[in-house]
Image 1 (cartoon, rainbow, N blue to C red):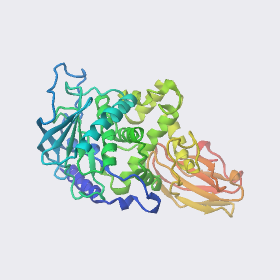
Image 2: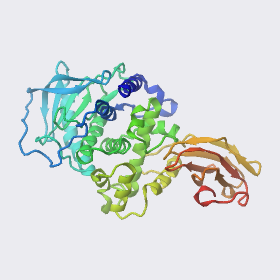
Image 3: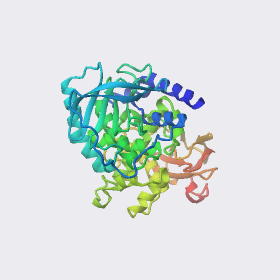
Image 4: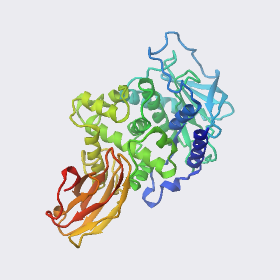
Length: 445
């Protein structure tokens, strides 16, 4: 029960945080931030010991056809209360039948006809073909060719107004409803509903192929689905990560679920940027038709997390490993602020600002040591050093962590440090002379 109580606390904190926690002058005009309930629903099922939380039909769709629904038909659905973590049932009415979806609305909800028509057309014409074309076809658990989309009042605690972070939607991979369905919050803004539709449908597709994938991989793919469908750059989440570049990319599902406030948003930002980087350098946006299926192959790969990415890179003939790509990605997250193109930046977005630096110094003497810093695995720290000759700056650290030096447009030497799969405290030492420090592999320069 301890895990359930902790989850309740996390949900309430997330639901009550306002956009101001991830905003400021640098975020004017940014995409609003909202929370995906899918990682939370997985944690609910885990705490219950529900063996069906990742249920999927290994034989594909069932042969028998499900009922066909027409506008006006009613059906009962099982939903989750994210405050009490209990299931409850609602009655809903079929508002429209599309080529690829049924749209149901919870009873007593008034939904404009234009909104209904717009959602169905958006799913049929944009979301469904784009997501399946990139991540693979959904194999599903029911015998129905259409996806069930339920507009409802998601019970997520105090964040009920339009300025709060709230649960905009979720996908539940358990067998509770035994349907391929998405849950959308009826109180969300129109742009949030569209983005959530793409986000949650990617979860459904991903789950139908690899129900045990790590949250950080799945959420990155779902953020990328928003980007593909609606050019949603996830700016609030990306800038949360920009302010917290020591946020680890590869985290456990439990670490993700327990994260709060801006840290939670930073996890989303990191995962989205990682997936975009993969797509631009190795996948469907790289310009190589041979790698068009890279993300679909990643989704279909049963190895999870880092191992799944390594396997997909190898499948497509790349010599790089996850670690190799991570190093380039950590550098690109800094240099993109200067408008660099892949692989030193991004083509599809512009980060506009450097990541928050861990340390900055004027190198006036021969040697300078920064204060001790702690880094978790698969995170990064950035140090800016002002000196007359940035090319001559040498650097080392007492833990042997990986480092790389770049020179920014202001003529400063920038040292990027990452423990990679390791973690712990380290001290970075820099020198104004090339011969003052001894290089030790990739840990010094």
